[in-house]
Every structure is written in structure tokens, then in C-alpha cells.
Image (tube, rainbow, N blue to C red):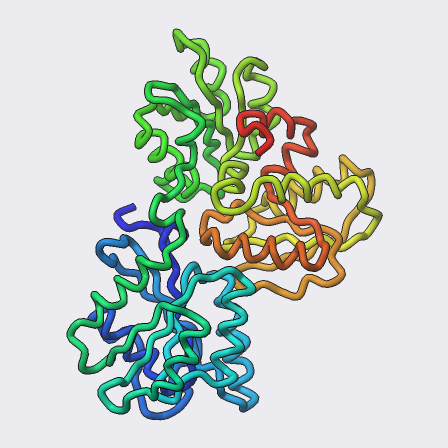
Length: 400
């Protein structure tokens, strides 16, 4: 892992009408020809992603989107794709020109506000035409972060953009949260139970395990990594009891049986439910399981695409556990990737651990689910609930 994973980067969405200079703007910021630039409207179709280090902000991923004012049939699909990117956007840049704000820009500004996305307005092409005072004042009514620049001829463009971004950055990116920093103290010992199965990449651990180990080390603690068959031996070898045992969800039952009640346990999935989403919302969503009826539709969301194995956690283990808990079958449907589907008709949504996506996307999904009054929860929380150990698995978080 020589690079910061995309899921931990600040996601900066670039929005605006066709031919307003979004792609040229991205190329100027990154100092690379990332996006194709053309005078032909609609050159950018799918979202263009570019990850860079933006000093002093740190690792970021730019999301260059298609224009929002293409009224053709294909343009509507592009617009739909562009608006879906809002769910992944931590901060937004709205690129306009001397024409000022039109209904298209006002519509997307309303979307920014609805999803609590900080944004700044960038007036591009100022070297071609100056915006009028009247149109400038109209922009001021919607934001006080306005940058005038030229993607082609402004040598100071990077410093202007970085200065603007710093003013709107969410607190979690100025002081990024720690996975366990508020629950462990310097010198504590944490045991991580990491089964090596078919889903583990050859020669590597899965991403949540790697990130948790790094976080434990960053907090000056001792990290002990074992498979479940060596867990009891690891505990016995310690002179003092560990502060916490963290397990892969598939070994939850075994770990619960081995670890004494005096030692807290939780799972990587629950840790990431807290880091990437809202733990309270997920816990509350799990309570709705008791209200499910036979053949109710349940949506399982997977942030990444992967080849399903015979004992897949989403397609085999969770359905099996829920059937054992409830005594009847449910109708499971699966969606993978970043596109959030229509959720009407579902009685429950179960989200993955979200190790491959950012917090903004998960929070946006929680917000949409709440507006639709559809309970949403998380893999690890569902598993611990079905096994009857949810209270123990979240005890260290003091029911946040």
C-alpha cells in the first residue's frame, strides 16, 4: 500500500454546464492531461477520476463530471450519472463563466445544500469576458466563496483553489478521525483475528485489517494478529489482558466463545460502520429485523465488485443467519458499485463495511433511506445481532 486508498481521500466533485471549462480546469489543477478538452459540447461523458496529493490538504480524488445542461436523451443519462456523483462528493466546485447562474446551476446548488455538501463557485474564463456586477452579486446570495480564474492563463490557479478549499473543508478532513484512537491508550494491546480464506487477496490482508493495524500503530499500541485457531493461545501468552479483540465477522461466533466476557470484542465491519457511516443509525436499523415478514425484499449494498465465492458473506452467510433467526426466507437483491438504486419497496437495506468507498457516500445513502423511512444497517451489525452478541460487540462504543 504505497498510495492512500481512494476511500480515505477527500472527494472533490467538479460540476457545471457543458463547455464551461471543467475538464480544462481539472487539467490545470493536476498539471496533467487527465480529461479530454474539446469545443464540442458533451465531450465528457462518464465521470473522470484523478487522485493526487494536493499540498497542504493531502490526498484527494477529483471527480470531473459531465455537463448538467444537455437536454438530449443521452444528455439526460449523463446528467443522471453526474447527479449520482453527489453521493460521493465531500466538497464541490461549481464552474461557471461570465453568464453567471442559470436554472441549471441553481438546481445543483440546491442539491449541494440538500446533501450538506460544502461548495465554492469558480468563475472560469475571466480572461475572455468579465462577469457583470449584477451577476456577481447574485452569486454572492448563494455563497461567499467565489474564485475568479482562467484554466488556461492563470498561473496562480492552484493556490486560489487550495485557499478556497481550505475554507470549506469539513472538520473530519482537517482533523481526520481515527479508527480506534478514542478507545485505546498508548501501550494498550489489541488482538486482531484475521481468518485467511478465499476472499483474502493472495499474499495480503484485506483493506480494513491493514488500515486498522496502521491505526493501532499510529496510536502507539501493540497489535497482535492471529487466526481464530490461535486466538486462545495468544490471550494466554499475554501477561495482561488485551484492551480489545477485533475479528472478521465470519469468525464472530468463535471469537465470542473464546474471549472472556471481561475483554471487549467487536468486528472490522462494525469499526468501519462507525468510521464511514453512522453507528446509531445502523443499530437502529437492525431492530427492524424482528418486523420482517416472509419474502420481504431486502437490499444488500456492496461498494466494490468482487467474484462471489461459495461461502460469500453477502449471498450465503447473511441470508442463512437471517433465516435461522426469523424462521423464514426473505427476498434478497444485490447492488454493487457506487450507483445507488431506487430503494422503494425494500423493507431493509444492509450495507457492506464500506472499506472501498468514502464516508460521504455512506452518509448520503443513510440520509436517502431515512427520508424513505426504510431501515438501513451493516453487515457486521446484522451478523452480531443474529448471533445474539450485538450488545457485546458495541459495548466499547458505549452505545454512541
